[in-house]
Image (cartoon, rainbow, N blue to C red; front, side):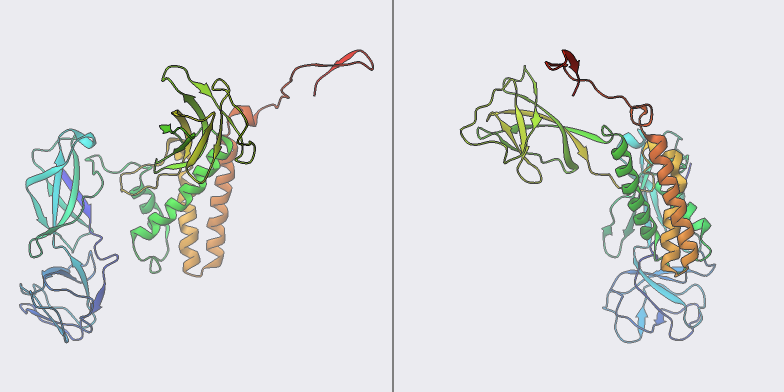
Length: 381
């Protein structure tokens, strides 16, 4: 089972350049500026994917002057202005979960391998692997005795069409020039910006989308605090004082009642007192069963996928990111074209995702009839 990770440590790494050429077999790298480098860190010489790119580890002395001293020797000769990146980690540790992505990934016995900088990927052949297994990876430095945090899940089947990784790759594949994009994180940020727009649009036409729930105790003064990290706004509250009988609350404002007003538990009200503090009338103690609008969860791992309602509109994510990229490159016409495409897809999404109760025929809700004494007829307000 071949498992591979993208070699992207150079994307955001500090770097400098060879001040002169260097021959193979040397242990001293002539460098223009040593300020970005640290003792015992790994450095990558050459851009990722180039045939003669290689990785060495610096010595224990703090780099200074015009030379980087390495523990190993250069395999290849390198010309002046060859880039040198401070990537810190020279190896990848592959981890496996035999229970798939629902399990816990542990380091594979022989799964620590050297990064292959002359390729876009570092790969490992897990000979005892299976298609049902889940994998993760982490960077490792024996010189520093340090391991990075784990990656997101890697599956043998690869990344789904609607995954963060694939959307990001679709963006890069359509760019005429990528010189203005610093790293994959930049594109991921654009994708998540558009995810916010899509999520807010969906909530606008379907108020019951992206709902979270929580049971929150409120005290004798009727106040309770919602501590859920993804809380945005209350959708509805049921309250109970005996954990058996629940009553639906109606919303009122903090200024709608006086201290001497009385309330009945069978007809409770709630009000907000701050961003996440709510109050219940009548006062407690009791428990509020809250349904609330959630803040949008960003896509962070490469394997993270678009929410199901948005999967038929993935092109809009690509268009938005392309618009931002070309705007940074000062190609205004291309930026405007892709931004317009994204906005058009957003409007189509708004129309097509709307529940039929909002997009179909509209009806007027009739209330109780009122008798008009003037002409002995009934009318409806």
